[in-house]
Length: 124
Picture 1 (cartoon, helix red, strand yellow):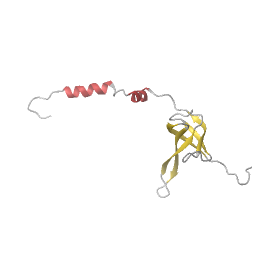
Picture 2: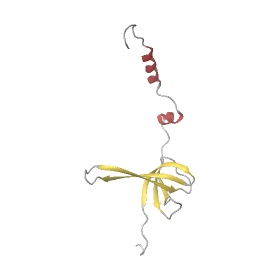
Picture 3: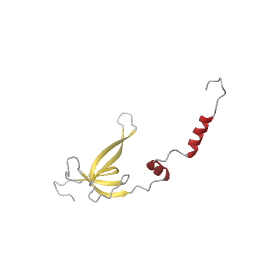
Picture 4: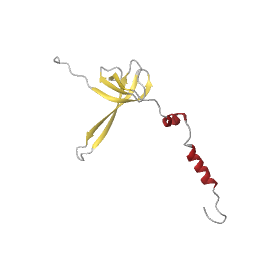
């Protein structure tokens, strides 16, 4: 039973979207609400600056955060646990990261289309 004057701390589950500061991660929490007039389900996104003392969180991890005392000007949350880790990069994502061009078939078809010559006197 809760003691008088002590309230429960709110927890949220979100995805780590940035790690640009030391011991701080940016977490995006997505919630779904029903629009009051149109009755359609709408997604609402909110970002939080969260204290990560162990610096174990990576971009893409799903974490549970809990509200806490003010740690800095904008940090009011801390990481409670890492719920799920981001899987390793797939081949297509890895190609995008290192900057490999499009698939070779697409490049060959583009080159062959440019190589086709039109008979003289006819507009292209």
